[in-house]
Length: 282
Image (cartoon, rainbow, N blue to C red; front, top):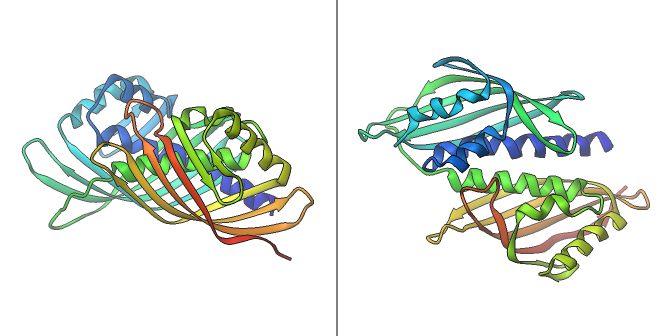
């Protein structure tokens, strides 16, 4: 069971970074957004695609110039994450890529990503190998924005990794919380100050030794004011402090504030409801 929790947590790390990969392409370029893209790459990253092989992340800003003025959407269809060794995560993924170019021409492709990420202790992993291969062309190409999905899923996996591994330390959440956040839980009531948040995170370590969340029914919608509304359910499993196996399901509603120049969105409001109560299982 412990290995299963570790696998879930490693997946959160990899998917946090993978969903960040696309964001720079889906909104207008700024120096901060390009810097955030560099943040997910190792210094000696190798990226192979139909455009050739590039080595090192210093060439990224020049490569991005190709996409100036494009509207891009990357719809992630499936992902598989496996830890190869103590230093390496393998992530395979298939996406539907859509774009509208400055001359208003439209294209759509299916693409497979084969990647390797380097683990970095207490920090997020970074990509050191990325292989991008087209797998098909879509007739009658359409365009549906994907930024809100990718932005919110990156935030979600970062949040879940924190919840599962914080062990009472709330420091990693600071860049995920809006200044005037409010979290409403069915078990701990309203949490709307840093002190209450710290207490909430500390209380988890007093009840649960290990845990993992599996998301389902994820829906994200970008509002007119730039915020992102998210609805998602989680299947939860854990080991209590007295070594009992437990399960639960929860429904979450989030409102994320979104400064696109920051690494992550920030949660403004979060409502958590138990749909299956925390239950001890054999």
